[in-house]
Image (tube, rainbow, N blue to C red; front, side, top):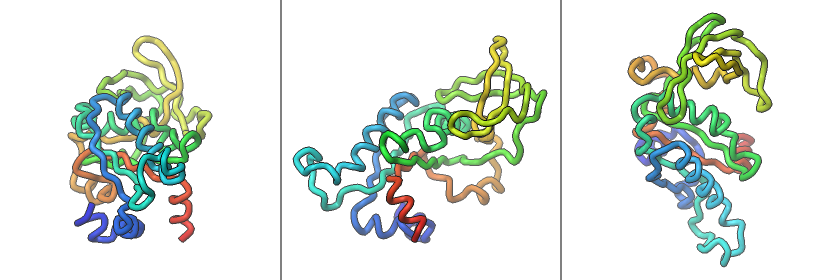
Length: 213
């Protein structure tokens, strides 16, 4: 964070936040996607603590965190393959917006092997749909473009090996397997990579202000 993101100026807002003691780095002890989600909810609530009465917040406003990096080194599936981490992000975190309406927080992902496929599957392709904790489900693509879901994400229609049919998001199968990651992927995705799987929590008003500036 200090040497690369701040030191090399990859994020123009990181340095001011760091100088104001506004960056909180937390290492999660969670070993499953469900436990990490609970961690995210708690960290999201903590980011709004400065707006609570001081007695209720339990700490002073000086040096209060305005953004949080939740480091997740203990979910084995995420360390083994980027696809499972990406599955959690696209489905459970609604591509970063799962906490937007209830808690005013957007989540941004970072991973050591972050890389996306250049093209998605076609109608008739057999695919493996990754689950967030390391499980895979075999499926065949019935229709490549099956419209959007209620969140506005593009979907494809698939039939799973057990005969069930349904819609899955294109984004959920666009992650490249870690063992297929190349040097070219490193160059294209450098700013989305980190030494460990990381989920970055940002308050939406702060994010919108930064985008205006």
